[in-house]
Length: 345
Image (cartoon, rainbow, N blue to C red):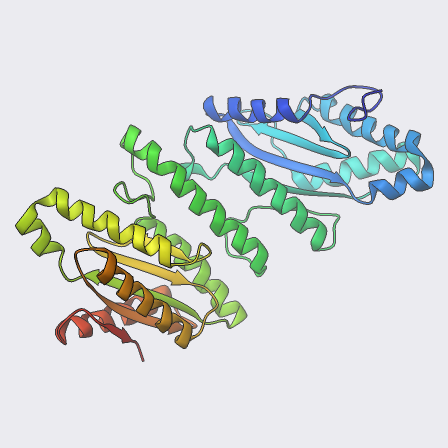
């Protein structure tokens, strides 16, 4: 017998899941992806034998087929569901409890299920094959978090901020990856997105969404965060002397310097024409100021211009407060002769 298959109704495998996910995306019908498995399945096989384990797997496969869902057996005791728009409404909790009850009724075993899922993010979602890889990766990470947090639950990528630092990290990484993918799509389709066309960074709209999430997490956990706000001192002179193509190259050079200097876990945005913002989560004033100095020095060394920087660090009562303080501090630097760094009180 194929070790990836159980007796009874056979479900397609991992390869078919990835192909089906791509089709759902390209057809514009992707609704959600759910990955789940049986908690402690190896121990069940040891205690009750592989025949009982095979029976459980077959019951899950039959239940999926009976409901008409697009289900897949992707390895061992792990399954996937691709939910498409226009089908029957899906309740993850009802599904989890229903399968557990079915297994108890047929085998007498109390089995629990853990899962991780991601829903269609709406306007941020584009028709690109790389979306399939991102969705699968995020659902897999959430399945792992479900296990770490005690099992017997389905964790969905949240729409609102949550207390878990691990899930917040997954969420931020997900939207950063969407921004990277949407850059190419936005250039081709010329549609509004959260991504800046020139640099591939999040634009102000994308910045505000991420900053709101991180600021709320900062308040809940009482962990200070930093906003490093920088504005070019020299873009106008470059545009006037060499033309706007040279100005665009300068902006792109600034974005590449920021990407090189700033950690991958931090967040960079092109706030405006020659304004950039960097969000640093869970940091101190000393570390935030040290990063601002590295940014300031790298831009001076590696581009043909300079910047003025305002740094806010603390637990923000609101995103508006943090932005205002960083902005006001940056303008104090401008009035004092530019090409410097200020730390907000």
